[in-house]
Amino acid sequence: MTGDSGKMSCEEFQAQLPELIGSGADVSSHPHLESCNRCRAFVAELEAIAQAARELFPSVEPPDEVWQGIESALKREST
Image (cartoon, rainbow, N blue to C red):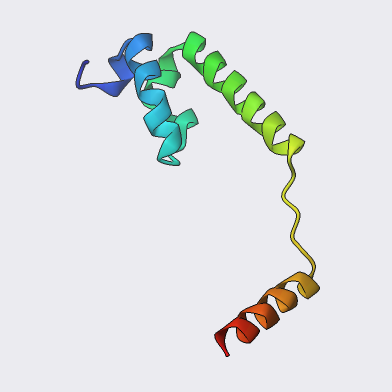
């Protein structure tokens, strides 16, 4: 791998991609994408897939009564 991330090959960038995504880094600002249309399109497709997956399973906040029930159960168990 080269020391300059803007000059790395597509294979090197894509090999680092899981780690970059897992770290929470802003992958879209990676220097390699400034000069590589192929990888920029690849990252855009991954982001579209991730967004679609999040929409399949929207997070739902349980009602306050659920938390109150849990708290009551924990208090009963601790006595």
